[in-house]
Image (cartoon, rainbow, N blue to C red; front, side, top):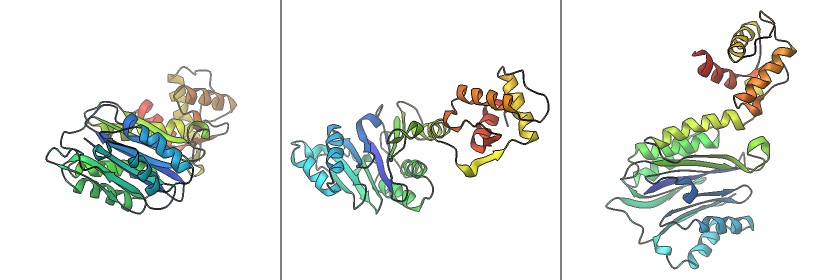
Length: 289
């Protein structure tokens, strides 16, 4: 009833999971990851406690294969489980029990160097192969690679019962809000007719609110941008601003308040620069461009 992928980016130290299921709130059951430890998916007749205990083992230095073996040895219902494990480095490990349902479809896994895809009651093995191929061929930030891989699985036939929920979990040291939490990304769609597309939309919102600006994305607020932003600020109730294309301290203070209200917290500036991603989002939401 579910397909997922665990992916690893050795360069950034990120580990992540993307998952979709014809079951509500799948992320809370399937996706388990911890910075400086690893990532685990628990599917089929899932036991989420395998995720918690498995991460403890990975954090102590166990390999993915050792962790999976320990979880299965203590589980009398191992034949009904589907589990995948990835450590910070080294090969992944996966298990699909002999009693995992296929409902006349397919259940199994595929493993690559930095990814492992798992699924049950799928249209065929091409689903997990497509996910691995999309992930391996991708570039850029891990979250977007995982989302593209999940969409590739859907487009290759997905789950026989359809779609309902999806989740994206990415961890890294110093991740999360303000860099204070290892949960760099934690976005979930509980119930939606197109959960993967909705997950991708929510992730872009998450980036704007939780991620700091990249220096390369900062541009000066010139006269044209200043005039445009003053119109936006005036519409939001900030009316006591100087006319024209200047951008002074009063404008900077008003913009900081506006960005706080609009949830751009981690991209607020105290100078005459603006993040191009923020500017594009303001235009989309406020100006209609």
